[in-house]
Length: 325
Image (cartoon, rainbow, N blue to C red; front, side, top):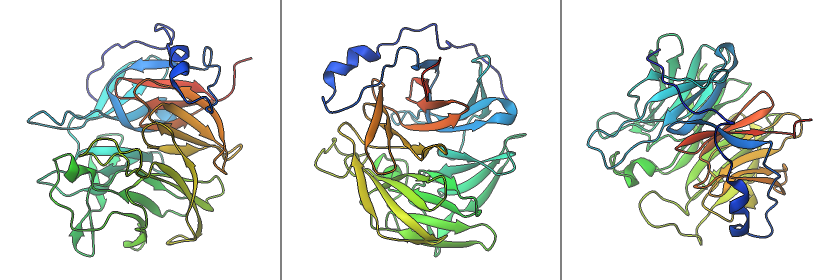
């Protein structure tokens, strides 16, 4: 699995959340974060993240350095009990988000690809790091740079394919429109679920699998300055069939940055959304419940037990879902 290194665990760092509150819009519901929300571990966690209960680990993908000559992304993990960080794959195919397979033995990975290798959805074996491609093209054309991937209870795989890779200089010009795809591993069928979003990004399913939540993030295109007049919204649409969406509606717009990765909770269907001001919790209808500030923002989030674990480039934050009694 690679060598380990000791890192800082929650409780050893001061929480500066309260300092941020004055700079946030007054309409936001900043949570009482003292006992619920703090840095769990300092590490270069950019994306991912995915909990693997069998090993008590959170896996994540590392922050890339686009100014380096050998830009690369590793797949790493942190042991939740000890805070120790190790490496599964030191050089991935520019992996971004991940999802745990149903059997718990592999990670489903959205790979952005590079100038030399196509983007893909792959499976990475947790035992030895071996890689199997699930799908790497649509109608004979390579994907742009697959960003987020999730798997439904039905076995269908959903993934977003924006053009961030090209805009950030590590992918060729796109040959396909930006879209969200549905892929059936049982038949090998891949279909465009929607190409109606300006820049498709985050994905999550409602607990009953009947609604697909998406984020549209044209406000940050990876090439130009932040444009607050462009889309930075959380969207929802009924999933009428594994490969067919109903009408798409906007349920929330974030005030800072963009809504990036998101997940839902089974108990209440709430959405936990990584955004430019931290971790945001919304009702299924898009009403803000709580804001947990993180300086620099949150890129993605996963649940493990009674807490959310968020990636923020320099650290993984742990946010208790309810106050400790």
